[in-house]
Length: 351
Ligand SMILES: [Zn+2]
Image (tube, rainbow, N blue to C red; front, side, top):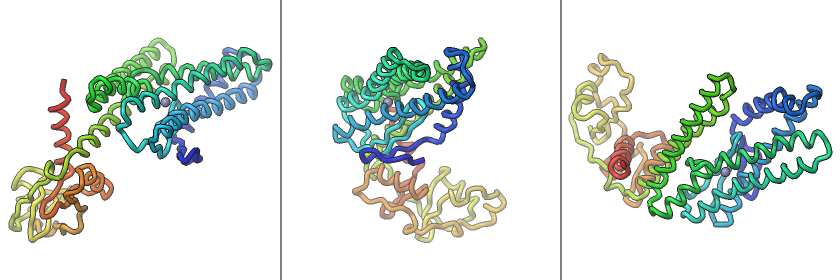
């Protein structure tokens, strides 16, 4: 959901925020506040819960905006921010920021959380009203927790980005640095999940740790894959991935699918036979139908030119949901690109 625009940056709220906001409000009103501040009314607890959640939201927003402002100071374009419950994801146009910029940019968020933590802590110390004392008591702790959690050197958390920037500075290899930081992220995620399970076995609620762990596990893998993909494909031109489709005579779909390697594209009647078009056909139907019924004209497929990088073409294929692109009289297959990146990664990055 689009919330508003600050400094030209779109602020989006991830749908899970609402779920967590409801869970957190009820958790605070029914558990946290009654435990630390007993003897108040249910309404009062509810008000404490809801004002804490609103201020937590603002704290997370300020954390994320401080990343954004440092990025903009360094001339990096930030499109949008998506807010999750414990942090956000900034959509930055350039992936390779340079070690120094990334270091500063990543540190800004946790520093803001520390600052907010101190601010709430001081307010708590001097507060004269129960309401203010109660909410700042929660908010200084949660902000310190946010700062510390985000500083864990697990990519893509802020600390992981700082760690990656340091590695990048030493190794001068962004892919390798990301791989290491991302693996530490996965290990940390697994530890969180196990810790959550362990707590639950001993009768303590470990659900939050499990949630965080699962979330972190998936983002640490996917952001690395994305980076690797982009970095590798941007360096390659068509010569790396194009294939010359073999010209064949018309035959049954059954025979053509078993003619060469699975997944191959053939040239037939000056058009292309794409195996994906026959997906889900029964063997009987494959034997009955001629391959010439499943042809696509060259002009119907996304085009690749010699000025394109493989990344450009891959993106075009993803956008049009096409498995094949046309390069002159040749073709480029998505499956082949994916395999080539995988081979490259196995060869280059295996320890
Ligand atoms: Zn952050």
